[in-house]
Amino acid sequence: MKTREFDVEGLLVNMAYTAAFASERLILVLEKYLNAKGERLRHDKKYNFGMLKKSLQAAKRYYDMAFDNDLIRAVSDSGEITDYDRAHEDANEIARLLLLYADKCGYNQKNYEELFKTLRAMPDGLGKITEDVLKNFYMKK
Image (cartoon, rainbow, N blue to C red; front, side, top):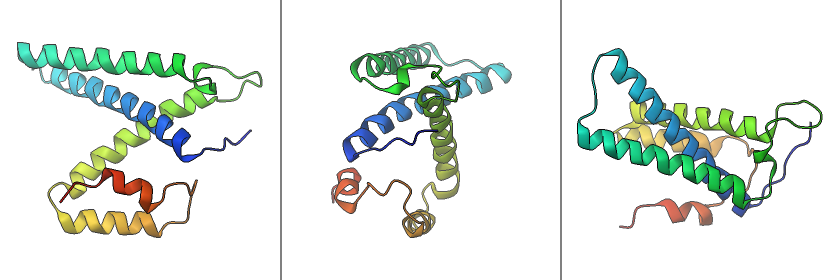
C-alpha cells in the first residue's frame, strides 16, 4: 500500500474536507437520536440544519471537483481501500474525537490542558504541524 506524503497545505485541505464530513455525520446522528426519541427540531432549527447539511454536502462535492487527488476514486486499481474510504474513516474518527473532547474537556480548562499536553508528548505521526500553524487557531486575547 502506498503511503501519501502531505505538506502543511495538503494536510489543511484534507482536514477541511474531513471536518465537513465529520460535521455532516454528527448532524445525521443527531437526527437519528431525535427520531428515536420521537422528537423533532422546531421549524426554524430544522430549516437551518437542512441548509447546513446541504452546504456540507456541496463543500464535499466541490472539494472532489477542485482537487486532483485520490479522494474522488472509490476503488483503486489494486482493489485496496482507497484514500476516499480512508477520508470517511478519518471523518468518523474526528467526530468521535470531538464528542469525547466535548464530554471530557467541556468547560474544564485543566482537562483541556492535560489532553493537549498528552497529544504534544506523542511521537510525530506526519510531523507537519508546528506551533506556527497552530497559532492560527488560538483565540485572540
